[in-house]
Length: 496
Ligand SMILES: Cc1cc2nc3c(=O)[nH]c(=O)nc-3n(C[C@H](O)[C@H](O)[C@H](O)COP(=O)(O)OP(=O)(O)OC[C@H]3O[C@@H](n4cnc5c(N)ncnc54)[C@H](O)[C@@H]3O)c2cc1C
Image (cartoon, rainbow, N blue to C red; front, side):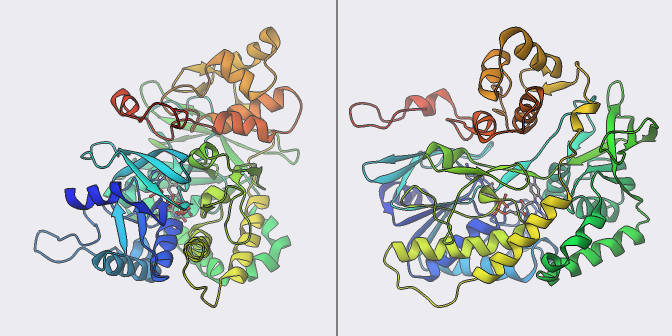
């Protein structure tokens, strides 16, 4: 984006601003522009696409390769839907209807003088852009992050989040290891394992903690989304082709190594959900662990939007059938209002983009994907029911297992906080242990710390536990200079 265009982006009040250009945000922004409304799309990434449609770093809309040819999204990273949205995005940019601010992170969202103000900071390594933009309406589509559970040895180099491993592979073709174990729960383990195998890794096992046969109880939910069946069949065939062993009811209870990962210890879960006695050691230099995803709630929470606990125990932003939150002028689409896959995110983005555009004065158009959304949500609920975080996952933690990696707080400190200092909920535990107060602000350890705290009290994790470790006054790290440059004085919003 040119300096002149950046100045325009900062000076005007946009009818609609969309945060995040993954399947949800890209779809919302293009839909709003299709309705004839001017849209600002802000995204932390270098190219639109988010996690699922992540492109190699040199592929950007309107970009040129070294031979002068226009860069196009890779088909295997998104297919026809991405190409359609990519072309529509370009068309709307060329006509001036849509402005894209890439490599730009929104660190703050506040309501200010009847409009919303977004505090911006460049993504790491990117040149500075506008510091602040304003919009009458916001569509928040920030997606989520890998959900992590600690295990002994998980801080060894070579233990990585499954989504992170996948992002490296898609974004730069980097293979994070050669002898790999993929573990955790959910269908996402399969594309990670087969992608690694296709790129040349030896995948020694996929360890699925759940019992996928449970899907048989939910045939109606599965049949409602035939594309998932086709995708599942393709992944199963790839697993067979690459001879990847698939072990159910199996978890990694320890990562072993001195300087880096050397092996993992596998155990089977018994009928009672508890880990068995027999331990199998598998040599590996990469353990990719995935326990689902944690929605990114920072901006919604900053604006005071209501939340609820979803079927997968994630805290999510609450929306109605048009993706509206309880804050007038704020819509949410994609993983931030419930983890359900890229197609659901795309569909919700369409609804949110249309709703925001109509609120801005665009005439309503016929046809909403409400029924398709219903089918995908049913499928997602079934997925979460059949791939829960194992009930007794804390059984394989030891007191010296690291829980908060930024502040170096071990699991045993949680118990001490409760027994010696009376900390009985996540907020109190955070205050006395500093869990979730480091660089990642609880993005990595927050879910686990909230669940462990509730477990020590003998109760289910509650919304207040998840909120305590999910609320962040700064959505991303910013410099002190950026904080100091905020407007101050009477009538200004409270600062972070
Ligand atoms: C690391 C990772 C890898 C994944 N890989 C896959 C995969 O290979 N296959 C699969 O089926 N599913 C994958 N998923 C799940 C996947 O995220 C969803 O199914 C789908 O991409 C969700 O779409 P979305 O639009 O809601 O969010 P996302 O695709 O996550 O898009 C959100 C976008 O918002 C941007 N953003 C977030 N916060 C801000 C902010 N504060 N300011 C500006 N921009 C912001 C992000 O940079 C991103 O571009 C992955 C998830 C993660 C976390």
